Amino acid sequence: MTPPDGAAPVAHRPVRTCVGCRRKRPSIELIRLSLRGDELVLGLTGGRGAWVCPDLGCFDAAVKKGGLTRALRRPVSAGAIEDARYAFVQGCPDVGG
Ligand SMILES: [Zn+2]
Image 1 (cartoon, rainbow, N blue to C red):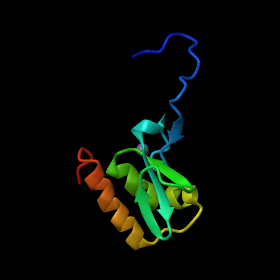
Image 2 (image 1 turned 180 degrees about the vertical axis):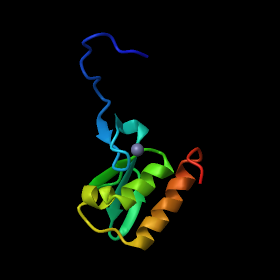
Image 3 (image 1 turned 90 degrees about the horizontal axis):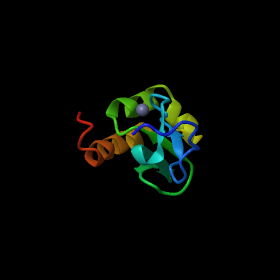
């Protein structure tokens, strides 16, 4: 799995930063959150998105540290966060919690 020396960035694998832990990962390994109206939704929907690892710790860190609202450039209601957190857990059976 080690890339060859001096390899160019691999095409079609855009890298995004998790707003929870600030680690850079390929976007395919991350979950995208965005606002639809006042609802926080998961997946590749339109609008400005925030990316988090499929890890509840990152989701919670993103909320607590304000990375989520910073990335979305909008405040997110506690109810919307709660709903999204539930969907996040459902959508990521391996995150636990
Ligand atoms: Zn993370």
